[in-house]
Image (cartoon, rainbow, N blue to C red; front, side, top):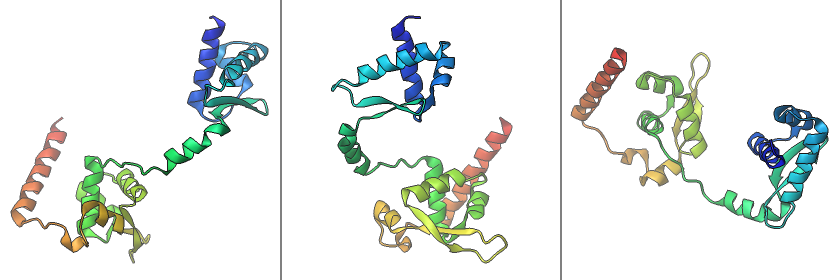
Amino acid sequence: MRIEEYEAAAEAILFAMGDSVELSKIANALELSEKETESILRNLSDRYKSDASGLQIIELDGAYQMCTKVSQYEYLIRIAKQPKKHVLTDVVLETLSIVAYKQPVTRAEIEKIRGVSCEHAVNRLVEYGLIHEIGRLDAPGRPILFGTTEEFLRCFGVQSVDDLPSLDPEQVEEMKQEAQEEVQLKLNL
């Protein structure tokens, strides 16, 4: 391989790993000696020292790490402060609906309704600030009870959960039938 190819490989390793990587591990991955690898990393580091780059390669006690230059922190802080747009997948939205209509509700109750694990969806909803822990059920294991937050009300444009649309019994039966058909289809696959 040419020097540029080794530099590209070392760059890819440092970028992908995120944390510092020991020189010996980089050398092993490149199938080079530590001395040759150190020279490649020095060349790569020199390229990043130009003012045109927002990145740098630093050495930390025999290990190397790719990171941003201090001069770029202002921009990183600006982007980190921007509100994140959360995407609610069907699974997350279904879980949120169960919490909204059945609150206070435990994870086990949600799973019983959905028929599958909901740990990821519940964690995502807590992360998004749409549901939160509102207490514990007085039962063995004292499971967490979840309910919706003010952020949920703001996002869905309602003043309270009492303002959520109610389903008529025919719609509920229709949805139950659809769910049973879906389960049957999955079992037949």
